[in-house]
Length: 66
Image (cartoon, rainbow, N blue to C red; front, side, top):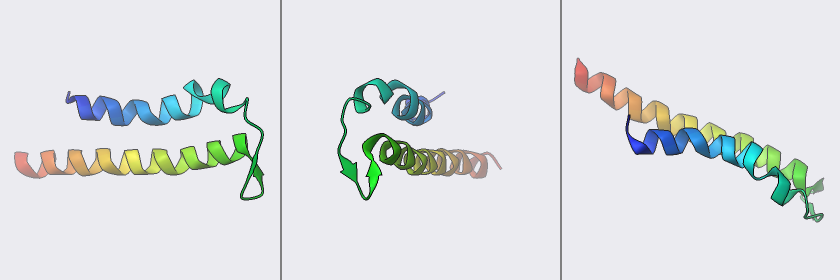
């Protein structure tokens, strides 16, 4: 497995689970949301782009195999 695939798989996990103790200490309001809620919503978009990149990488590999 390529290291880029592992990194793209770990980014959403680390964003959502690993960083919560650090971002929960900050209490500003961002776009009308508490920072923790904003962080989790941003994590959805980060996960989307990571999965989209993984799909693009795998699509290239599938097309090359045919």
